[in-house]
Amino acid sequence: MTTGKQYVDSVFEKVKAQNGHEAEFLQAVEEVFNSLIPVFDKYPKYIEENILERMVEPERIVSFRVPWVDDKGNVQVNRGFRVQFSSAIGPYKGGLRFHPSVNQSIIKFLGFEQIFKNSLTGQPIGGGKGGSNFDPKGKSDNEIMRFCQSFMTELSKHIGADTDVPAGDIGVGGREIGYLYGQYKRLRNEYTGVLTGKGLTYGGSLARTEATGYGAVYFAEQMLKARGENFEGKIALVSGSGNVAIYATEKLHALGAKVVAVSDSSGYVYDEDGIDVELLKDIKEVKRARIVEYANARPNAKFIPVGEGSIWDNKADLAFPCATQNEINEEQAKTLVANGVIAVSEGANMPSTLEAIDVFLNAGVSFGPAKAANAGGVAVSALEMAQNSQRTPWSFEEVDAKLYDIMKGIYENSAAAAKEFGQEGNLVLGANVAGFLKVAEAMSAQGVV
Ligand code: NDP
Image (cartoon, rainbow, N blue to C red; front, side):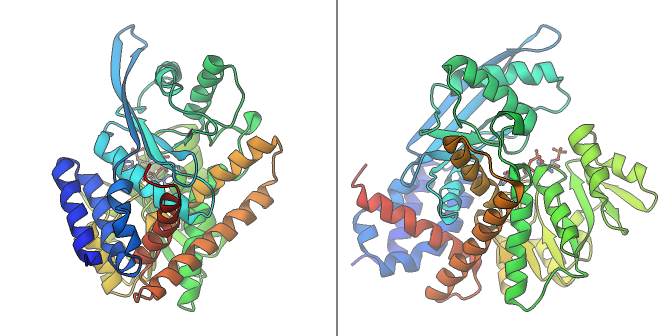
């Protein structure tokens, strides 16, 4: 009989052979596969049904040309993607990322993770992801609009409120979702919840903007509670200064912690008085300026440019990586541990390398993996879909309360799965297993499709 390890290894060999050049995708797959070995030992029927090989192959990938005209009248061309990974438990759901680093490997890693994350939320949403190598930085509002309209002209052929519902991610916030939604409506002549993260005047949900950051903090709260701790007086580092980082910082302050550093791709700021969230919002959300402006506006804050140090060099009790993939490597994880970090909650997707995760787990740090800790964003997106279908908006408090319960549920289910499979406290394994089981059962019930 094939063992769980033999099965997982053989599928991973095939995945490597077919996707050898997709480093980020292979990294995300390896992390999940390592967790699933005991699951296949316990449920051999999933080996017989070859669930894993089916799950790791996207149902569909669309790659397309996005031509647009810049303000000088020059024709520009970018590449767009939508990876529709799994519709086993609901319509494809996952964000759009606009960043120059975007390629098929990055979108596939994000889409693959999204399958398990969405399953963990307990809501009926499948996994997908998309984006473009378009760089919104330095572009005028008109250029952003023309790009979004061109992008949606093709994407609209592949999505729909019951088919595939994209949202934001890096480089795609309220402004971009507005332009994308306007173009979809114009092309299709229908007013549905086809995108989430919409503005409040046209179908958006209260608390969606805050959801990912707040959710990562609610998840950390559960991890701290399990070790008899809370946020009171704790020092935190939050990387990034975008949507996730800003609202993680806001909620950490509300719960009694002090965030002393935030960053962007140019460097980080250290503010011993605690990050002024309103100032940060003004610089990042309103002015769309660089993080150095924060240090210029605060007498006690220092700006440390990239290359002269890392945000993870600083002493803290808590770390919230909320910028991008692979932003904590093994050395940085060791530094955080040596400096006394007790909990890491991943607001970004795959911010810790596989080696960094091992450092945290081996040191007994409470580690909240992205697919559990940052699931609050997609969870509230699914609540936005529910409100759009009902044509009834819910209050901020109602949505926030549901978000809190969902994050608590994800923690409890992940912790229970880790315990059931003999690795108590390992939330990486727990989240992967809990997320996998529901999707596997749905695939099994639906036959070979
Ligand atoms: P934003 O575009 O709002 O902010 C991203 C932040 O991260 C910016 O400060 C940006 O700096 C920094 N950053 C991005 N890329 C890099 C890089 N290569 N190196 C250094 N810094 C970088 O994105 P979000 O806050 O929405 O997303 C952040 C992370 O959270 C991503 O991993 C995303 O996938 C994840 N996430 C987001 C969700 C959401 O609801 N928005 C939901 C779940 C996960 P700069 O401006 O200089 O580029």
